[in-house]
Length: 173
Image (cartoon, rainbow, N blue to C red):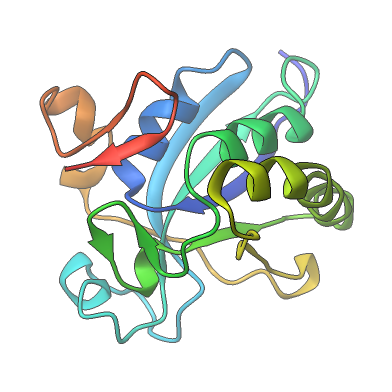
């Protein structure tokens, strides 16, 4: 096994995002949680009030020799709608925003480059520009793991709320 890097992705409901990333070759581990808010150790109920500032986030530990951060970003941008502010499908609130939390300056530069590369495709597909936020790697917020019942939720509940549709986009009914 090679080196391990960590990346954080917020793209709506973290259940579907975790399932998506955990199925990729080179991904060693995933965990869902909350990032980007002002409250320490928030609960799901607190985050759902849309007052803590946290985004539902999936932490992805990956082997960069097997899958690159660039490839993970391609998956990120092609599996959710990055043009809707604080919303993915039926889920509405700042906890469902599109946001990247790079852990290194290299990841930050790659995220900015990939966002620029995908901008025209996103504009053509959705008729709007992406609103994905990219946090500065030097100011990485703390990741707070979600409660145990959220971890691997769709494995435990195969007919759960969020899934990946045939067109590759996440759908939360």
